Image (cartoon, rainbow, N blue to C red; front, side):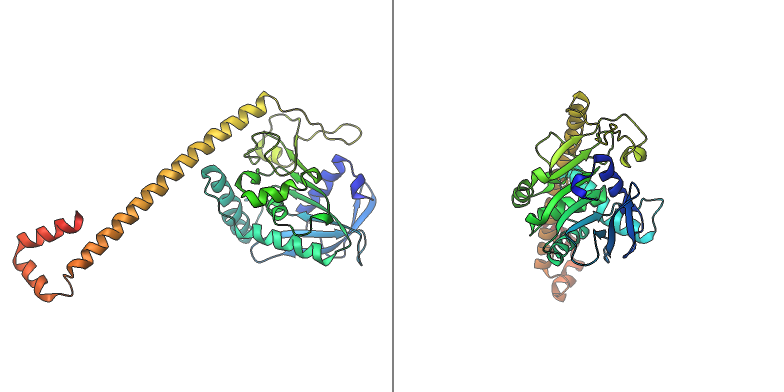
Length: 311
């Protein structure tokens, strides 16, 4: 089966494979038709996971790379909780809400692994998939991709908008292949944070036509509906989208203000602490035994020195 000819529903089914424990050498089928074999399961020390699939094991012409999403807080283990949530998901959420942009290590690993696979199969066309945490890692990897010509198509599902965290160089790079990236967003899924319009994002926005659902159900494609042809039901940006976007912008603006105030307070506190330490050291009460003895015998002098320190 040719990935380029997949319908929307088939692409979603391919993306769902990232949550299965695929093993190297395992043959995969879609709608009872063979479409590839697992070439590699990438699992790094920082918790990054991806599956590499080719139409054949040797010198594949078509490579599918699935960037794995989170295992889930309740369904995971201590390692996935630490690597996927405490070290990646929560820091990304914090960074977006408070606009304190720091890149978790798993994102840089994703970029490195993508470039390694592109270099490993230089004659292959790549089709990339990412959902949730996988979409986070994939967006960052695309911003640091060195072999853009090999990427044929990218499908992003239910991830936050990492574009707003990118610098000028990263944004410039992802804009180069915007036409190759389909970014699917269910606005009722709280994970899809930071989508303000149809332009400032990685790829082309597909606003999924869905309804209010339980959070986990909405996040796991529960609101996706398809036409008999297999095409996903989407819609134009509506009032619900703009209202949600405005509310998120207000929350993030408030978070940015809080972070700015905190940073200013912390810097001011550090300055006062440094000044206090310098003044305290200048009196050399401990090293100068004579001065210390004189101060202890003269409380008025000691109070004067202490007032000078705190000034």
